[in-house]
Length: 93
Length: 474
Image (cartoon, rainbow over all chains, first blue to last red; front, side):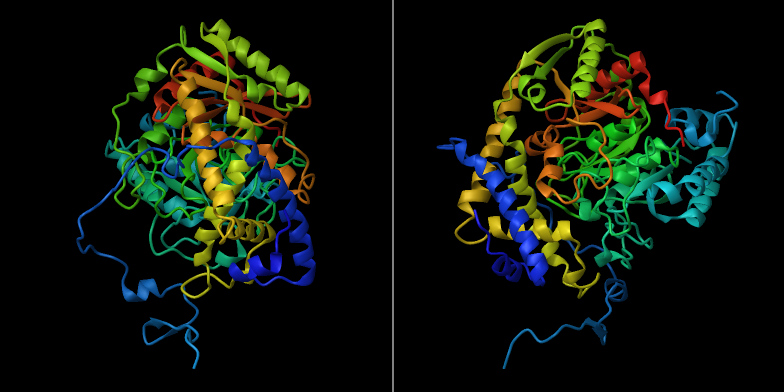
């Protein structure tokens, strides 16, 4: 299995240089070739398991409880403005 | 207590007795651990942050409570936290440059529970960045070294936690086990490590790796200490919807029982895996010990074992790519180019296996194989009480030996990952040494919620063998 590293890196929002791209192409293809052995397993009529202990629909009451203050919530950001996180414009013109 | 023993060498049980009987104070015990850190951390690199001031303050508080006859379960006991556990006001890095200045605004549930139990937090331990790794070498803060031989890896990802307990820098330490990250370093360092049933300990506030497999556990010197620690950390948490309802269990009772008549299975697929010849010998010796203790040993089959790593290296990177998607450098942490190579590999692998056109062939397929692996265990546990195997097919390898071979590194968890995939508990206990004095560990696996049985079996083995009493020559 060959993996299109530049495309996947773009999807994952990672910037790679050319040297990294070549290195990861080789390493990731090797890993994908290895995991391909799952194809040997017959999984016809087998359900998937996502929740291994079988819990279902764990709900709680929708109640307001004490949480972080605004200044606490902002305490780790390097980019804020008037008590808000400051981000680059998301929408173009 | 032997007078020559350093306080830091005590088990939790011994320390609690000594504190209660006023043979020493928590401040003295904490200082003894800090001394050990000052002496050896420069060569072992077990800690990322040492919280000396806070530790001595909590120790003084603990001493006051002890004088008031408080009986909190871990009162005055110095412990370390893997630097993946959020600590309010104390830097939490995940050993990644992305979080090197991150100071959490809240404590992980486990940290709150430990604080309520009276612990003294002595520092935050090194790990493979984001818990990605089997050797302890993937840290942006430099590799951790094995105290039994500093040219060897300590095992990962909870490298610093295992080393800190093995080298008496603390009495216990927390860890996380997503695919062997507690059991492998426990076995490489001659300490006890527990990977509990999925959902028995809250994941809230522990930096997420692969959420459907992440288990929160710990390292101690003895099995009894392991049970004491687990009694504090386990339990339902409204902040983690996957935590299980509390069950009735009595650890003291389990620790007093022998293993006569207990049915233990040896999975033939684990033994036929390419084990280092000396590992095979050591494992056979361990089986003999159980036979002599009256356990009934039989061969069992877990036919899908050989697909464990393949399923795991689809499920885990998929969930990693999702969990690490939140690191955008906006609300906290720095930009994504600061991810190290291993995180980049896993993010891309997971992004690929979840991407349009590949999801069914990879992720969905792996989740079906997961069902089969779980059914293997379910079927086996209909007839037996527990399963034992080596934790690792090899002894600790040399630093640098596998760093350019990611797949080779992944395969070192070949005996560990099926436990995570099935969500069952597994206890790693010391089981001897190689000819050149490198530790060997076995794991005792049980069905979901059977921690009590694992403590019973592990404790009986430990009482008979006493390997934990051997210390690295630092």
